[in-house]
Length: 534
Image (cartoon, rainbow, N blue to C red; front, side):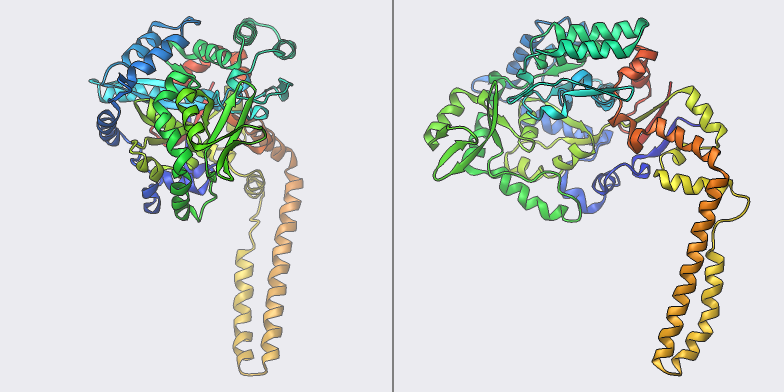
């Protein structure tokens, strides 16, 4: 079985919007700036260089960025490659490729790895194509999110390992209290062996030796990818938000995002709109607080609190404490592109869907809209699973099918005769043609009777076809069960493996080789759902 299987569009796991984007459907071209290919990256870096390298409050924005990153890396051991990448950001010919992700416990689902590997590998490809420039892979930690229930667990061998506690503010500031109990559960499940010990030590050092979730996640991602030069950023910092002050004020006073995203909505009428804008797309945050800012009765209020501001007061608050203003999902992309010399954002289908709502908003703010690239998707399979598939005469295309469709297709192939009554139905329709001609010359009630009888007999053949298929399924039950069992191994709960399983399930068997294989195999500019055999 070949390792490269099918395109994203053929996999059946992506929305119509993302499929149409990948197919460069003309109707969507107004929603993005440049499609991800090497020729367009050349144009993008020229535009970003011209629009990004200016002084902000008397300092180069690059200097502020490097200063913040160097502070954030003081407490961890980073590779020379990573530290050099941070320094390179001072240079006008250095650009970033960025992916973002929530602070999922122990990385959450597998696709966390794929996002970062896609980002690292694209930087390598761009460096090869444009050697006079440097490209730095960035992991943007979603430290200001507050949806704790989305990130407080990971799955290990069909067991959900959860961190049960309350959380009200930005998750990056959340203390690591209570993670000793989570480690105890993980330790009891993972078993013995060199790789198991390595994973236990990694969990302990990340979560039991750091005081908050942001620091723990930075340590973890750095341990996994530091030698590749990954730079991890926590943008929940006052020094970075100073550059964003003009945009925060614009959002407070003018609600431009609301207007511009709503203007874009008609272009997405035939798709499900991913995110609906608020009038003000900002939260007010403190350590245990993240609540929406609303404009009511002539003043600005923070929901579910007693805090209110006049226009003058809230603008003063923005100037004095920009770190207290947190962009929501629609404003965060602008914040990212304002503070980073970024060329491209790499994300999943859901992320790209809301980015596609934002181009006109970016234009109104005179900020270059990044190239949008769908992250690599991967199906990890063992050699034993490949052997099973070969014995069962299954292709990867077969295994990506909806389970019922796979069941039906394989039953028909295994059967000694054709389970398809199309020929019989066509013959029946021809027999009724003469009756239809006769009916046209007589009473209309007879024509109705003929049509009813034809429909009844067609339904009868269809029911016989279904019954025959059901009977053949019973005859070949043992073989079909093996097929479905293999698909369930590869697609747990009939969904993508990468959205359900934690990396530790494979790491415990293959160790660091898992990441080395991904770095070797994944090609971010190729629109293929990659099957990687371990």
